[in-house]
Image 1 (tube, rainbow, N blue to C red):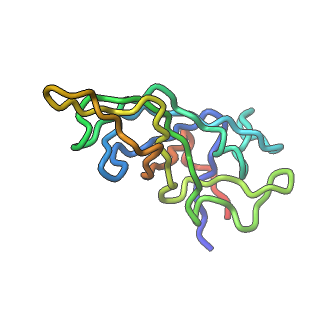
Image 2 (spheres, helix red, strand yellow):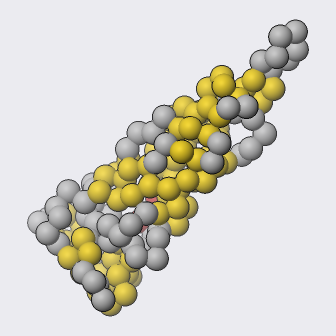
Length: 144
């Protein structure tokens, strides 16, 4: 069982820009931790905190829809190596840096394609899936 870095309140959430055919102009987010345990007066992130991360107002395009649309980035699910197996805070697994999480880009305003002489065509997809990673500010705190 390898040790990995614990995620704390305010640590950065970095989303990758590629979501299938869509390219998102990503902004980083932060995680709001709710664990009972604190380290250097910051709460540890626990299972469930990742579901509250929302980065809104990101623009996107795709080859079929080159006129930008807008949407929100969220963490759909953590990777299998991003939760502690043994260490808990308030009976919940602690969030670890791990490798990558599954990200979801939810379309709020669809990207469009304009064909000369016809009405704009909107991207019909309500969301795109991608990946991202967690970036701890303090790299020395480890757990399993």
